[in-house]
Image 1 (cartoon, rainbow, N blue to C red):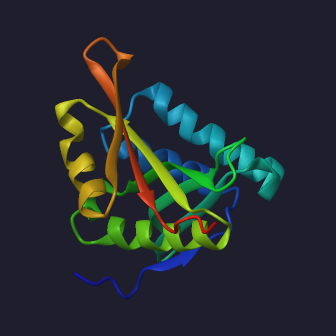
Image 2: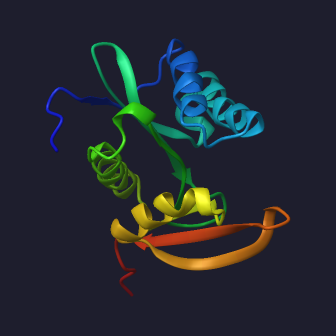
Amino acid sequence: MADPALRYRTDLRPADREAIRRLVDGTGFFSEEEVAIALELVDERLRKGDDSGYHFLVAGQGGRISAYACYGPIPGARSSFDLYWLVVDASRQRRGIGGRLLARSESRMAELGARRVYADTSARSQYAPTRAFYEASGYTRAAFLEDFYAPGDGKVIYVKVLATDSG
């Protein structure tokens, strides 16, 4: 279902910090520690701008953030990027917002030189919809790290090739 009123922007504003905290916390998926990590990336971007290595794409309407993505180049890799966060307001999920946000983020990453995008998620059953989302979006499972986050909670790493190396 289209959401024509949704607006996208790449600039991150100080007021976005609290909105992102509410957004991440409001999903019910993330621990306090994970929420704090999301905010660390916001703070780093606000302090250092592009030099932080973290890029944001914020989607919203009427001054309210409905979704956001955070991504950036992987240090030491030539053209690989990490998708650190992709969060959609719990009340707005299953409307195609995440897919549109992901596609726009991938386009931005490609403009910045990305050829491959990596996305990590938990192997817990709660994250089955997240894994299905990545797979439906053209990502393939590249690795599974058993007991990564905690005993019984593995890490699933997905990859999507945006462009192939030539030569």
